[in-house]
Length: 620
Image (cartoon, rainbow, N blue to C red):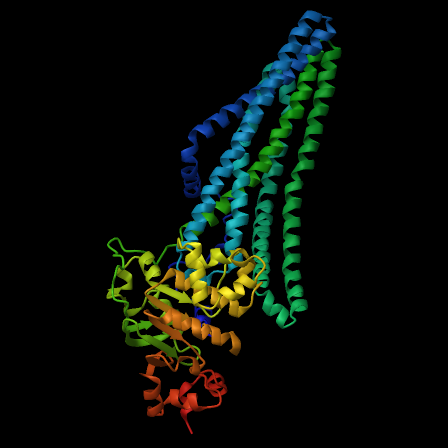
């Protein structure tokens, strides 16, 4: 185990709270002008599409308002036996129906297309931002919550965008029907609209409960997704320890809480449907009773009554849809708040405006009085100073938690130092571009990360290396033979993280990747820790190829693997305890000498691991 555990146990401070901190905030249902303005910023480049979609929606609303009127007119023509007038009305009806269909299709198609484009831009912005966010933020944020932002919240926003124009059409239809009812027959129209106060009161009572239900559903979903992501990521450990039953019980509890919350939210959503239906039935009864009496008394044409009935039926449909769309808007506003919270996470590790590129600089690494801690109250490194000369191989050894991996992380500028300087190629790492620093320094980790794709793609990685160069690198690190034994050779598809090949084979592929990248400075973090002795022989040969002509920093627990290093730096509790070549350190009789000659030959022997005190290992 390396010092990576330090970053998990004591996350580095971040400029703002992690994403999970706002999940319980009562932001559901509030209209945030700032969020809405930023939405408009993404809609800005699509003004023409928005305008066209709105015109189409307004056209479909106008055509839909004309259909009941024409139906009533056709009934009157039929009752009056006006065949010519009926034919004209039916022809106009057909034209209006076609116009409605065309406008509806155009409006829906443009709205969907617009939503997809905007969501694509938002997803791209979020993904691009996550590529640059500092590790200090990622250390504090649960991957499940990140995925909830990238998926659930973006989907909620997409639903809103797809229904945005529909809300405009429903509102215009509602206003239009109200005007038509009142202008056609004022008395009957007013009687029909008497149900509106009841609907408004019911809506006012329903709204607070719906906000609470929707918020609980959102939080429960986020919690369940976080638990699911954690168990999927740790499935190997789960199966190794036979923890499936316990994990299932823990997840079942969260899933059941999510079920209850989602059921409650669904119930709150659906309760408005029968409510509106009951009010619609009441309004229909009013029209049938009062209008029917007026028709029988010859005070109202039968066609007008038919139109009234059709308008009443259509009147409550936009009411129902606007209620649903208001709920969608609530969700979108909450989702937008959370999405922009992600996009607004500050990038603390970034290029300065006057940053220089590392070009043909001497491959040196120097630490000058560096103090650093993931938590400012608990420094990991204390006033560390050392220099790695060009083409020198320096090994970092020490007990777990002594700061080895922290030194590697600071060299690559994954974090900022609290005090002192980290100098690479004669420049402070804060004064050089991150891109040039990444190309200057290559890293091979204890467990190499291979991406889904072919072996060739994984070796080439982010270079433009040819197939011949890839094969040459694979041969140099003794990976070519096992690759050619695979069914498709270099075109063999690797599974998630390369699980369909052995750990040693993954490590050799990572060595070939590093060789193709050809960095001036090479860092190895426990590259031989998880492999068997037979594979280690091949890897040791590969290391000699990798080390040739490069400045190298190596972290190792097994001391036998680094005895040939030019210099060995022994760390203890964030301090440099001793340094020198293997023979020199063996003569001094210090901690390195004691552990090298012991049966364990490792800084993680039982005494050190149990006490946490490296000095205790040297006491007699």
